[in-house]
Length: 104
Image (cartoon, rainbow, N blue to C red; front, side):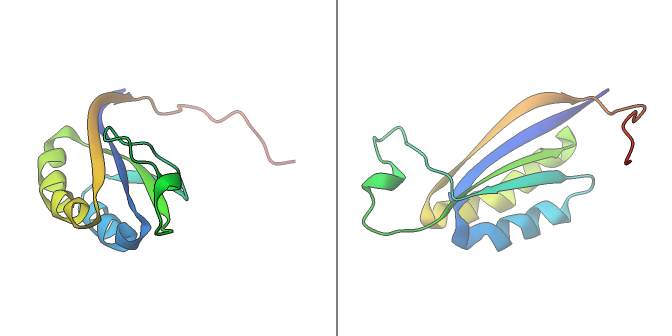
């Protein structure tokens, strides 16, 4: 087990390439992308209320704590363009020691 930071990023899909390019600059950064997600912001805005149809994405990324600040400094300007959010929390990675499944 070891400590990591979890970065949860919500953004317009237009910015996906830029965000993943930043994440790919990090060492030992892993991430998953969920496309076409709906959201409801603190200002009462939701995707369904918008006249402009755009796809939203949700990225969950994990990185070593010492890399979080540098990645965030590069991601923040991207999120500021169309709006978006990033939440960072502490997490613990637990790696599987033994795979017991088989392909039969």
